[in-house]
Length: 206
Image (cartoon, rainbow, N blue to C red):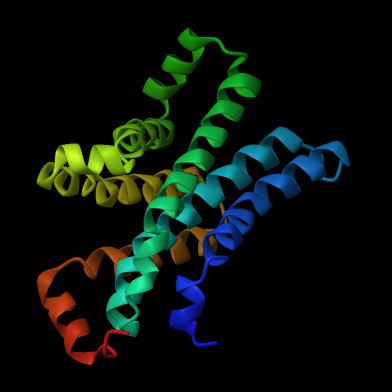
């Protein structure tokens, strides 16, 4: 089976659902198995944040993959991946709110104001909410052209998420630097000269 046929197959989306949920299931299993290290809450917070960023970058990669491979089916997964990125952001934020602040909203707001990296992360969450809320087919039809303009917020969200991670890291910047390079590359692809160059070197659409 060709890659194009596999991406269009009936089982491709259920498989993607399973793959996106797997990190969370492994974290839950690790929590009950007491295998998340000396500070399981920190591990849960860190891992859910990492997976949110990874899925956000994979979401952004769908359009370049379509362009470079000539396989239109890549974009079938963009909305699903974006919603899973939002899901992991909500998990990340909820763990921080419940375990770090015991649902104390005043303490949470104080932390957001006083710690710039938390300000960046919280801003990214707030910007993601309208994107997630307008990801249904009905909202896409209702908003028309405005939907595409609204969803360009994902570029700012990506920048905020990467900066949040870079600011959070205290010693080893390698992993955060890799994410920053990937994000920069994917955002540069949105520039018209880069897209025109990709269009000239891409495979024919299948």
